[in-house]
Length: 429
Image (cartoon, rainbow, N blue to C red; front, side, top):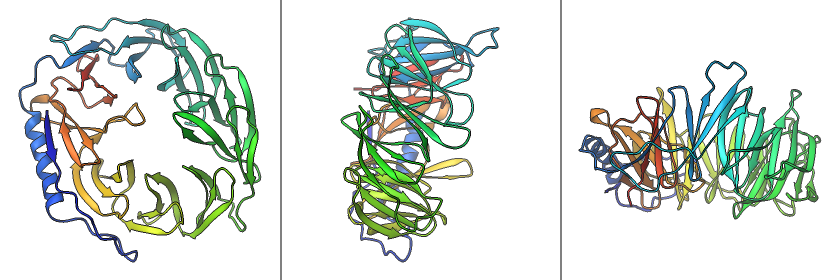
């Protein structure tokens, strides 16, 4: 295992609100660039024996998903045009082996889908299949028993939930209005439902479960509802003078009303107004750890104090915040089909490191490892974990025979192999 220091952490002065903060100079940036050169060298090193945990069989047109302690392979049925799919579940291997064994299936089922499986996620002892045929807002959810693959139920709507508790199926109709249905995850039985919502519902999570549902109704007002019963816990009208383009968002303990001129924050539990901030040309707002990130039309990024709405800092040159942890922001920008990443201090906006070009893997766990990959010499792939707290890269492996089509799990990484199968690599201890 190799650990690379991206440079000493320094307190950055608060940037002036009148101009974007310039790129950080000095040791952190230089060290980050040197680190990436070291990663490229390590990718060509001799592979360590016994690191491949298993090979999961699949055809070149199959897809695979890391789902909890399972790897689920999704393949079309040969000679069938109805959209049926074969799903095969393999247990996540516990330890590396050399040579890697061919994984034995836990179960295999045929599911008439009628679209494509976009995602599979665990919910208690159930696997939820998100099936889309048109836009992301449309589609259906199919629930399977995690240990047998038996179909429990299927209903229209895309599932939104925490890891436990109630399950919510939301769907946008052809007229643009949304519907929401709360169902039992195991049986699919309806608990309560809502119609004619003006935007997609929002949810607040506590300890892995949804503890509040926030909906924006036909009159642009907002309601906070109990997730178990659907009962209204609080209600508020839209801000005075709000535009027709008003949208809503839940940000931790705040409900935000957003239009192209202002952002208005309400306390989520009581829906009492906390603050109003004039922000022309707002495109979107999101939670970035200890601050609220606001993107404006000129491409700039601003950070607001969630308690007061005051401007903390502003910067430019970054298109997205990929992760917020330990007071750091992992930011990215896309230029010429290449993603460049950096690390900012969440409290000041100061740039701590420029990580250069690489690929961040989709993580299947909410707080899973931040894993990036870079191609290396000799056809090997270098995965490494980014520790945002200390701003360090830990080289995890140098993998031969793997493409860059990978997923990261809490304890392993899965990548497609040249023959269409999938390799599972356990993280080193």
